[in-house]
Image (tube, rainbow, N blue to C red; front, side, top):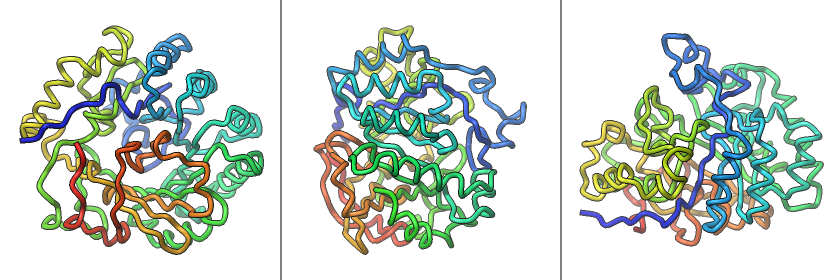
Length: 367
C-alpha cells in the first residue's frame, strides 16, 4: 500500500537525560500531582534515572557522522539533569544542531551565559499563560514574572548575538485560549518564535478535541513519520517507538541503546522493521499503540503563510509556529528541526490558523 523508507539514521534524535522534573504541572501526563499518586505513577518514574557522561558521549559520538537535529528532552525537565551542560557542549562539539524545551525556572545568569557562550542553537520555554491565575492552572505556580524575567535575562545576555534562538510555548487549553492574542502580542516584541500546541489527550491523541477539527475533515490515514525519521531514547537507554508511546505506563521498548549495540543497531532492528511494515501495509490497527492514535496527522507537509509580521508554519492541527519574520536569521531549517518540518525535504503550502485548520486541504506527505 505504501513504500516509506526509514532514514539511514534518525533525522531527529530525542535524548532524555533524566526522567525527573522539578515541577508538577496539572496538565502534565507524566508528573502531575494526580499522575504521581502511587497507584497512577508508572514504574519507570518511581526510580530516578540519569544518563552518565559516558552514555551521553556514546550516543552523540555515534550520531556525529549523520548530523541529526538533537532534542535534549522527552518527558522531563532537561536542565535538572547532571549531564545537561555536558550534553549541550557535546552536541556543538560534534557539529550538530540542538534544541530543548524547559520550564524556565533554572535560567539563571550562569546557565544563560553558558548557552550563549557555546552558541547553542535553540531554547524553548513553556509558559502557557499571561496571568498568574492562568499559570497556576497550567503550571501549578503563579510566578509569571519570574518566568518573564528569566526569558528576558537570556535575551539580554544574548544581546546582538544570534544564538540561542529563543522561543516560548503555549499548550492550548479551555482555561487559557482566551489569552492567545495577548500572549502573541506580548512575546512578539521579545522572542524569535512562539509555538502553540494542542493538548494531547491521555492514552491516545485525539485531534477532534482540538478547536476547529471535525472528524469528517480528517483525511485517509497514512504511515506515521515518527517511526521512519525520529528516535526517542529514554534516560535508561530504552528506545520507544515515538514521543506518544514514551508516555504510556508500560511502554514497548524497541531495544536498548546501551545493551543492544547503539542507536543505529536499534534503529535498524527487527522490532522497528515490524512496526514500519505494519504501517506500510496499512495495518496500524495491529499495533495497540497506533490503533486509535491520530498523531500521524503530524506527518503531512508543512503549511505556511505570512501574516501580521509572522511566518506561520504548521505540520498539523497539533502544532502552530509563529516565527517573528524579522528574527528568522538565526534559524537554518535544514539543520535545526523544531518540529517545523524535516530538513531539506520540507515543502511549503498554506495554513489558516489552529482554530480553522482545514485538514481537507492538507498536502500529501513525501516518502
